Amino acid sequence: MTVAVYPFCPSIGLQVIFLFKLISLTTGHPPVSTQSPNFAWNLHGKPGDGYYTEVEIGTPPQKFSLLVDTGSSNLAIAGAPHEELDTYFATNNSSTYVDLGKDVKVEYTQGSWSGHLGRDRVRFPALLDSITVDTDLALITSSNNFYVNNSHWQGIVGLAFSALAQPQGKVTPWFDGLVAKYNVENSFTFQLCGPYKDKGMSRHHGKLIIGSSSDVCPSATATSPIRRAWFYEVLVVNMAVGNKVLDIPCVSYNTDKSIVDSGTSNFRLPSDAWDAFPNITVHLAHSNTSAFPITIPPQSYLRPAPDAMNDTTDCWVLGIDESQTGTVLGAVILEGLCVTFDRGHSFIGFSKSSCGPNVVLGKIYNSSDWSSCVYMPNIVDGLTIASYVMGGLLLLLSLPLIFASLRWTWQSVLRPQLYPEVPFLTLDEPNT
Image (cartoon, rainbow, N blue to C red; front, top):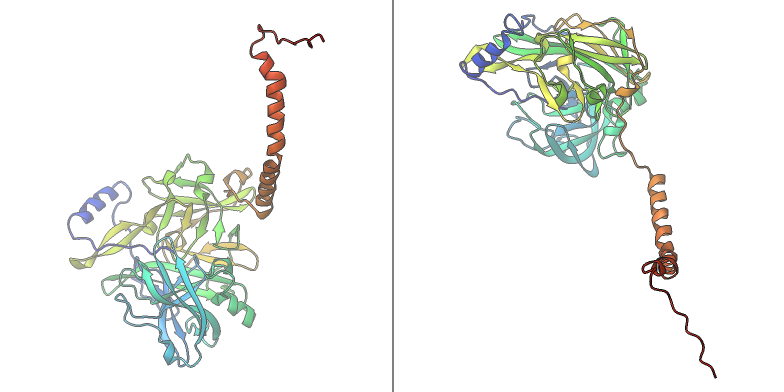
């Protein structure tokens, strides 16, 4: 989860310089839709603010907005006043709140928070109107660079696997609890539509569908396996800028991981891939010997930012960051697609969306084995550590024998050879 911090930019200066640099990339500003979101959209936000949805917590319900994040697993809500917020969850006003007596801290690529664990009733009226789930949640009591851009959300709902939930082994994520209690299909789909103009301001909207999305999005025409059940980790096998394929070892894209993360605003790339971009194409593994391309236009990664001196125009900022920890396929990549996170069958499915930028989802093609793209961390397991310890003990116990052997070698072999020209004398016994 990394929500971009888009600064306000003056009408002259940064805007002019940046637009000057864009002349070679695009003939003008990337178009922003003027389509207003209808009643069906359940995700909302503004550029740099992420996508959030309405939630009700406690009894009687207290209403908030939560950032929807596939890059983490905790459900966390502000539990104390904060200068960036106008409301927070008051536990003493909920008759169903239970204190779990544990502290928790979560750190993201950008920002962190700490707080206290509890449990209460949680309902997402725009997602599942009548379903309430008793959920482990964190009350955020302190944070660092977590609430950004005067965010319109007061917390976060993590939709990744339970392996990421903190403290480890102590928390059941909201989605896991939903699947277990109501036998809901272990899958959800994002339809992120990107920016649109609303009364002169840039906003964005989308939809989160729990379970089957067949009535909203077509069936996935390409899938990429989930490599490990923690983040939604995929394998990036190639990348092209325009028609130029980047000459970079593909393992660089995946060191130490490549993830699909709705809570990260930008498309984050490893240092080796930092370059000037027209259209950007990312190739994802479909199997060990096949892949498919996703091509995004400049409209996807040139993000509107409000102009502090003019409410009717936008500045444009680059929605691509440098990454030191692999590749993050954030909302910049996901907008314009329907993306299904099928946990039950361990794949992420992609299909064309009816809204958002004109993203091109290419056909699956066959190629060579992608094993060279896989990053394998150096892991020392318990058995290896035990063998090192036993080896050290045996070496320690053998030291006296080693020293005795060295002493004998010195006295019997090496020392006589030091001065071969001087004979050793043997004294005869005295005659008596």
